[in-house]
Amino acid sequence: MAEVSVPVMAELAGKGIEPEYLYWVGCAGAFDDAYKKVSRSFAKILNHANVDYAVLGIEESCTGDPAKRAGNEMLFQMQALSNIEIMNGYNVKKIICTCPHCYNTLKNEYPDLGGKYEVHHYTSFLEILIDQGKLKLNKSVFSDKRITYHDPCYLGRGNNIYKAPRNVINNVATSYTELKRTKSSALCCGAGGAQMFKEAEKGDKEVYAERTDDLIDSQADIVATACPFCMTMLTDGIKFRDKQEEIRNMDIAELIIESLGIK
Image (cartoon, rainbow, N blue to C red; front, side, top):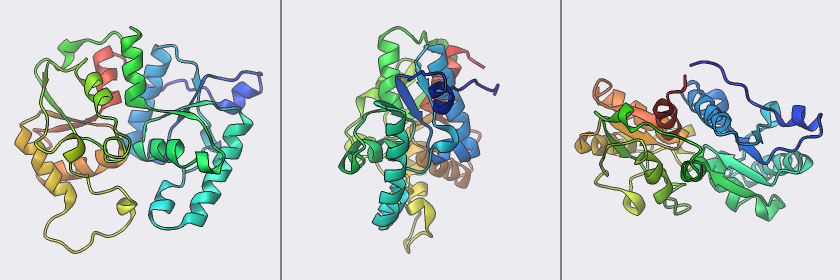
């Protein structure tokens, strides 16, 4: 994938510029090789749609979500207060997140610590851009593919965002199918609540393997995801079931990029 030009808050501030949106990249988007591709894809979409945004770059730290879920409230507050000080220093008002965990934390938990922002998950933001006619999508790109969608816990049950991701997907898909466990009844990928960072507990079956079986049963060619944890776990599940040649795991931003024909 070609590199992308991304504006940085500190550089813009040096020129006296305050962008409308902060794109919060998140730890996975900055460090995980697979999800760095998603970050680049979303940045290219923002550039294509002429969105006025910037990133914090090296000034961005973890939101503190894993620390809080693991029970370390002090570490969470330390991370959160540091981030709030930096964002308020740049007069940040609006934030876009590609990670539902970052979205949930910034939207629902930072206000108690003085960080009050208008926070968007990128699927809802993509829906707005499509409705405004800023993204001209080509459905023929996926005309021979059956697409399904896995609901991230922190996006769906956590924040009741079900329609936006599906509306975006249906703007690129000609054949869409729901999983048998979906929306408020969807099954977790197995990584949320800091589970990503600990050994599995005793049981008969890994959660990601159980969810992968749902994907296989759907007979979909592509499973669309909207969370870095979900992407990691379901990719592992697809490999575990040896279905790499049959099922492709793509983030919604990657679907949009391919539909737009942007390299």
